[in-house]
Amino acid sequence: MTTAPRKCPLSPKARRALKLLASNSRGVTEGLVFAHGFTVTMLAALVRAGLAIQRREVVEACGLLIEFERYRITAAGWKALEVTERARQFRHRPDERPLQERAGAPGVRFPA
Image 1: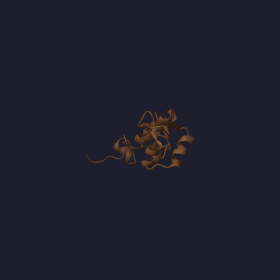
Image 2: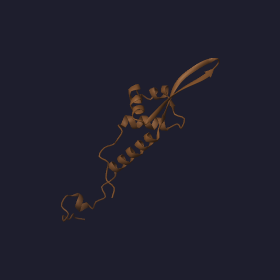
Image 3: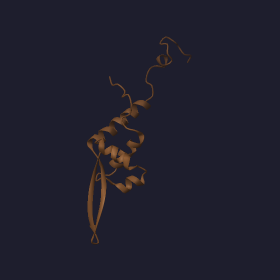
Image 4: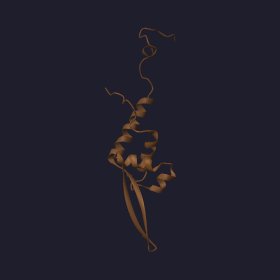
C-alpha cells in the first residue's frame, strides 16, 4: 500500500525552473533562465541543493572570447521532479472509496 507524501518537495516556481533546465539535454544559458523570470537567488538555491549544476563556457567567435554560463539539471533534480509529479497526481486523484464511506457513515444508504 502506498502512502501519500506529506508535501511537495519543490515549490511551483522551483519545479518550473527545473522543467526549463530539463527541456534541453545540453542545459540552458543564464540569459534564457532570466528571460523566463527566474532570479539569481533561485538558480543559486537549485545549485546549492544539488538539483542543478552550473558550468561556465567560453566560445570564440570573430576573434572575440564570449563567456557564458549554462545550467543543467542533475540526477537529483530529475528525481525531485518525479517525486513532485507523483505527489501532485496523488493529491489530484479522485477519491476511489465507495460513496457510502465518503459520506461519513459506512451504513448510510443513498437513494438511487
